[in-house]
Length: 203
Image 1 (cartoon, rainbow, N blue to C red):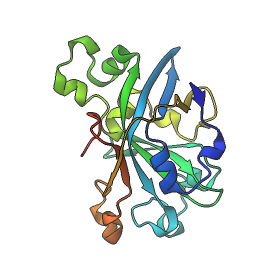
Image 2: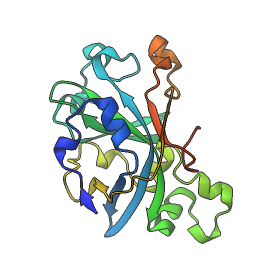
Image 3: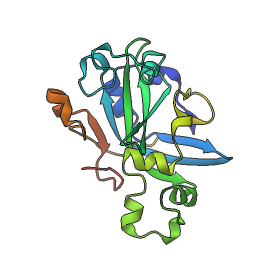
Image 4: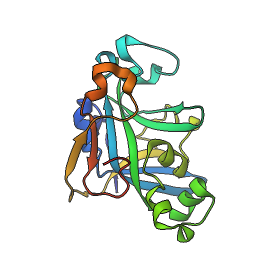
């Protein structure tokens, strides 16, 4: 697999969100490679997007990474218990990002399953397998992505996105999820997913 170059992320955030579908999210931790194919994303268009943490030019210690160069991780916690993994896009000082919402697990399935359920993958039923990484908090737990992985350069060797030329799929788009507070921005069709993949969180 070939690691994505930084210029992949230095584009319009909507196109990056679509082009990330089918790519491989890789996290190497304790000598083990945990990976999953990206099957669902959401785009957040920064200053003009009421759903984005950087809406209106908001700049805090948490969101500062969004104002930096593209190709870095932005990991934050929701509900005091779940982490979400985002990728910073666009040029410096354009604070936009793509949330990775779901992946199809590929490598070290037992390790991913132990992280999520404290059980081996072979012992999971069909529902548990489907729910393994079909949401932003679930995939972060399964792939052991947390606070330590915030602000990492995705061109490094610990956390990165790779290409394996997988392209045999159709892309669908829909409204983003869980942002009812964002007024008209809640209706923007900026969620993208691979059609008919079982790990997509919401069809």
